[in-house]
Length: 221
Image (cartoon, rainbow, N blue to C red; front, side, top):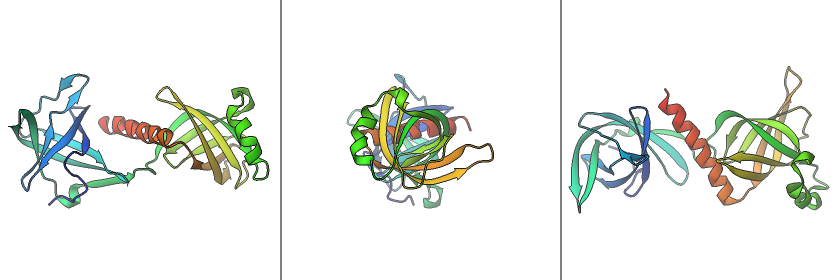
């Protein structure tokens, strides 16, 4: 019996034949889950009975996946659907809490550090400052809640940090706090930055970006 984390109208993604297809849950019975015809780049997945697929879906808080097989098709109100078998509860994997889903990557980041005393009065100037006024670091992991940053100079614990970086051709600007900073053998510093002020839309862009990378990596397994 499946757990109730998946429900009708859930958007989902289907990994099949090393491609990722968009779909959504149309119906759930004791025998099957009915999904809309999976589509990618204008083409539908040509799924037939007994094909194995992986289903990925998210709730407000978490991301889940399970493997299943196609058991048939049906059409209801002129909507064609693919029927997949119900997974057992222990077959559904909770990948991670949605906001804290973290991926490893290496991307350029611009950052500026403020101490607690002059942070508020410098904040507006810092965000609107020229890129040349920012230092450059390397982001080595990212989640909706923060990032790990490699930098050349120590960032003191509790310091406020403004970070600027690009994802999906959009600039992300976030305010965070340094919660960890460790000196590495090569002389660099590995700093954990926890976002405490970030626009909700930008956070969603980050979460979407991390999921996109995760899906691409799952596709190549």
